[in-house]
Image 1 (cartoon, rainbow, N blue to C red):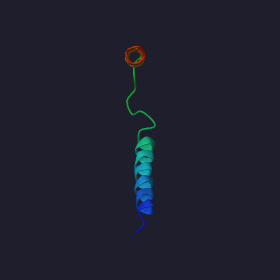
Image 2 (tube, rainbow, N blue to C red):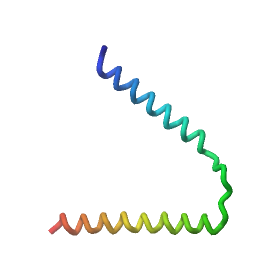
Image 3 (cartoon, helix red, strand yellow):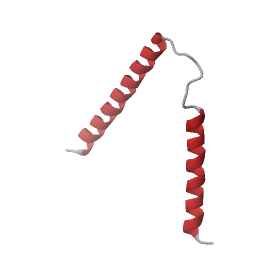
Length: 64
């Protein structure tokens, strides 16, 4: 059996599973209050800030 065919079929199977999960959870089953939405937005901004700081620190360490 050709290894490329095997890898391609494994990749197709993985993508199909991911799409099935995405379809299943496309619509949230729980209603979120405005406070929860604001909290999640703050968390997302905080995490983006941390990733930005990490990238900045990496660049300043690598570049002399």
